[in-house]
Length: 78
Image (cartoon, rainbow, N blue to C red; front, side, top):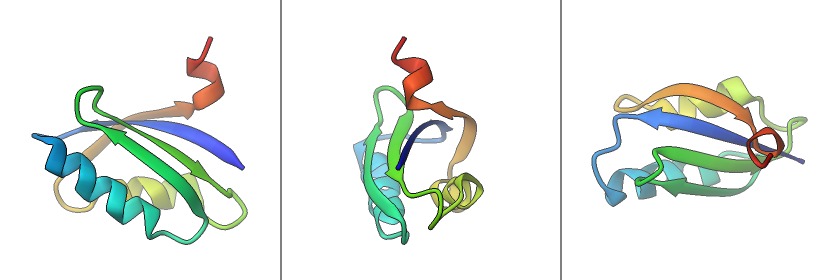
């Protein structure tokens, strides 16, 4: 399992964060997603054998949002 943090532009409210969370959690291979409007980021726990990060970027972005960066969660914990 792998956890990646995606920084997101274009969220205007908590409903946007909930929309992203719902979409990401429906993706096969995703175990958990938490999305914060305040922090403008999504933290996603997923199986990299089942879903690739590039696919998650597309799912997050949809037609309204933009992923501006992504990095492993363990890197940000330091």
